[in-house]
Image (cartoon, rainbow, N blue to C red; front, top):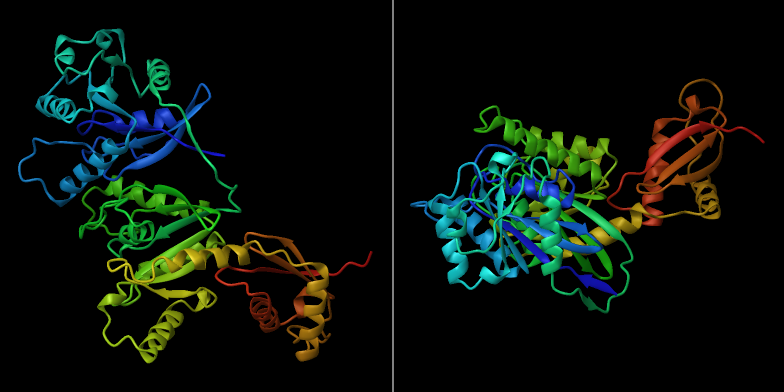
Length: 450
């Protein structure tokens, strides 16, 4: 049995401390926190637990519904927040104790009452960091949202009382019949700004999970989305665009976003490297691949915006494959898939490809399989000599790890086996055992007779 977790949406205007409260409730530093208005844009979702009850907490962008002529990002923030409000079982409406109630707070409170959201709304007064701010003012009661709950998300005071209130108002857990997932696969979606990472995530999910604009660095935080596909649990992680542009408007904030994206690569099993097929591979694309290789991650090269390429015949496809392989020669083992996130072209096939790669990543070869493989390959091509005058002799192959696979080659002298023969064995291991999309770690060791 699996539980459909209740959802708690945190809403309010910018800079009232929603992300700080989100991090406090989930007991992680998951959401970026800064004094810059509009830091949070997309819905950020994580699971919290209190007194044996588990629930999802959803952080949202700052709502400024009084803003005249809102820009594209502001409009998208409102859309994302509205989706969170509509789906939520409870709403935490956060205001600032120190700045008091302003017009944006009042208008948002009126909208909640008008849209019949009052009964599921809890009024949270944040930044009540000392006794001076602990008493609710009369204007807070005028919001018509019930008893104000005074707390400080920054130091944690009052948060336990809020959690008690949340748990007391949660609906009963719903249960559905479900089989235990076979695997849990974490997939990071990475790439430069504006290559279509968020569009790809939305296309795979079939919903507008994250906002999409033409503005670089629209996505600032990594966003996890969990779902079951073919009895496997997936966590898709959309990340901020990775760049080193010295002209970034908010350098410190964008640097934090980029650092979070690089951390996400380290935590993932499979990385989707998203590129724009109609543009040349850049130095930054290559820099991202180095981070993938350094962390020994499996990878799929996603050539997005395929809809912009005319005459998509076999000759064109082969030309682009040759181009990608020429620019990423060290990722020759990575599959390339041509997609259009905008037109939902082949994006769902990525999930099946990930399953194939995960199977390869976790493959466990027996000693007998490796023994038969080695004998057949030595018969086909004798080990090539590197340094020295002695001929190399390979005693055995042994797999010592998975995720990714790690193979040890035991020889009479590690110095005399030519690197080309190591590559020969590696290539044939891939072909014979269908090890696709993942690095194979090879180590050469001196054989010690027992």
